[in-house]
Length: 314
Image (cartoon, rainbow, N blue to C red; front, side, top):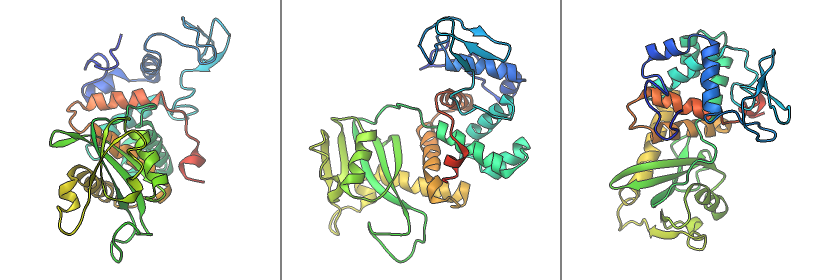
């Protein structure tokens, strides 16, 4: 049985593309892997939470022996109602995770031979949504927090009142002199009403939260955090020196958006790209591409299916 925290290469996940191709030659093999990821300790009924081997119907549906409730293997996952083969999905997950800087919808369409750009685009967005694990752990220790602006013209205005850009809140753990894990989230504005919920959602209470002197962060101490403030002024170190981690993350994010995606991202889809960047950044030191594939597959069976109209923002 798989150790969820320390999966074994060559046992719990393929190490190379050739191994992946050998493991998942057909949908039956893919279904077996999905079942193993979805119920690592054996089947659990979604309706009554009973355990034990279910009945399998002729329609390929599992039926709980206790409550007679039925569920399919892919129900409640990003694979639900797919018209494409599961093997094609597995190839997509491998390709997405094996590319260091990500892949465009056009690139995915070409590699997989998908019939339309729209299909490739939809698959990528579903996979990006799966890159955020439900109930993921909060950052802790010393965490730098700041905001950055993404998109829109660069010229003309400065400071926190740039109206043409999307605002992204950035949180980065201190890891010695380096950067630990990060969290990114698009926010409406830089008021306390937007910034405080972001911090509370991504940073564990009791942590040291390091920010600049912006008044939007003034309620952090009352919210249970140790608030470390560095006032950025003309006579002090510049922001990128005083708070290097969040500024480094913001710079890398913008470079990635412009490089891999040519900056062509609609505001309503930005959250998906932030999820992907976070997934890749937090696993940047992993040398096992197969492990990234495994983690994405794990999360793909935990994330609820996303309707197309939600993906396109309609």
